[in-house]
Image 1 (tube, rainbow, N blue to C red):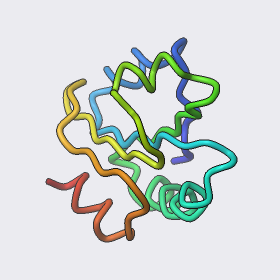
Image 2: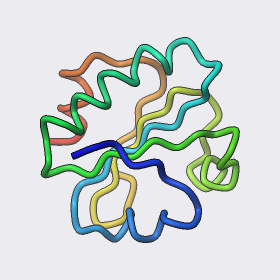
Image 3: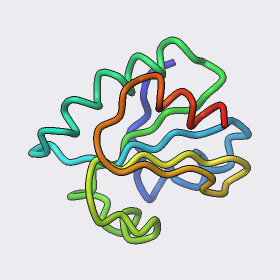
Image 4: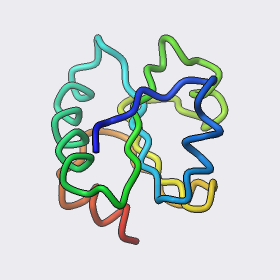
Length: 102
């Protein structure tokens, strides 16, 4: 499954998808975000049981504020619509998968 571009207009649908959701808060100008992006995309492709979304903090400031995102990249895992895991900074694939499985 491909990565979904999450915006305020589709956030409720993503949150209530019934799947475990990985949200990647990023910005185009952020170097560590560019390092995490291919990892997030491969997780989305290899794990259809998860819904993976990217949120551009420059374009979706309201969503970034909702989740108190102060540094990027920030990865947040939602289960049943609630944030259950959070990591700030670049992370290896195994660590991101562990967050999703945890």
